[in-house]
Image (cartoon, rainbow, N blue to C red; front, top):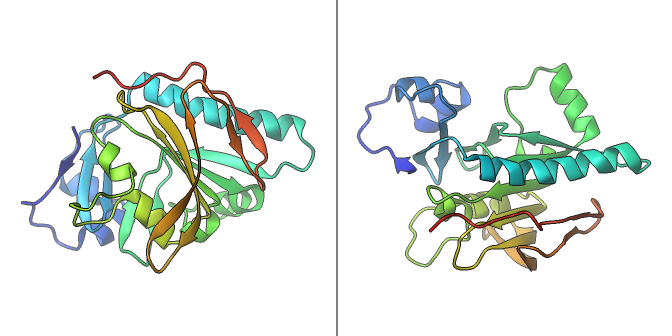
Length: 217
């Protein structure tokens, strides 16, 4: 399960340690795919995702790759589990997938960038797991800190695709039109598992979800 660390004495702020790539070391986390993020100012540690989770991410990635290979002028690339530095919020995320322009990808490669910044990202994708779902969704009224939904909106990322594997209501939601002052999105469209996702322009592609399954109860 994901955990919020409250009792560590750290030599710097969690965010500054995260930016320098030192936070996991100070927390003595195993090198087994465990993710450490700073969400709403809190340290959040999550286990590595399951195969079912990763296959959904791969399905989305593959669809973008197919479009790059077949659609003239298609300018989008996907990167998985790349650090995203939300400087203005003092947060650091490890999104499941980020969609960036090919020019952004080229520059990041040339400069050997450690992380991406929100202005470089056009679409963020998260696939929920039982351990982290609350951190990915729109926050409820009782939540005191921001979620990644709010962080993506507050930093102006144009689109957020949330694949929610909740067995009670598995669905995919596309959020758009971020309000950076309020840290909120408008819900653009929602699809049930088995329905085809349509990503509007500037992406303009469809993603089938026939093989997607909810989490185990």
